[in-house]
Length: 176
Ligand SMILES: O=P(O)(O)OP(=O)(O)OP(=O)(O)OC[C@H]1O[C@@H](n2cnc3c(O)ncnc32)[C@H](O)[C@@H]1O
Image (cartoon, rainbow, N blue to C red; front, side):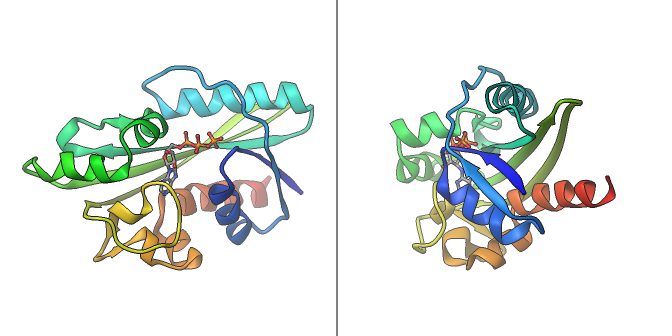
């Protein structure tokens, strides 16, 4: 059994679909350090959650990196979603010369022995919202003509930043 420490139910749903082992969601809101690096944030979060819970855990830190804004909001995606909302992020992007963006996830696993991190990245475009599945920025993130909110969970996992990071994590677990 794997413990996924996250306050985000959408992330937990995707991890359950993907990982071979059972996933238990632990709703502990670990303090996020302020950093430009998703790796550093995820690793610190996993370490902290392991100390708090006392069992092996993993966390997922994700961000939307918009090319026209030099990667912003990136590690600040959650704050920007809360303060501006995804429609305004999309409207701001529309005024720029490119709508290209990347979604990145770092999964960090901590046990008594240390921290391992796994990365997943997907490229796409910021478009006017479409679809009602998924969560967060999914309605405005289009990958090969379809927004993540228009995809079923399995379809999104097959191409998404989180799916790729979870796949790398799953391979590592299997080889351990
Ligand atoms: O408790 P944690 O796991 O940290 O949950 P969170 O929602 O705060 O997680 P993040 O900081 O990693 O999320 C950054 C932002 O990116 C959004 N996000 C993360 N993964 C996403 C995905 O697959 N599709 C759309 N939006 C996503 C999410 O809604 C947040 O606004």
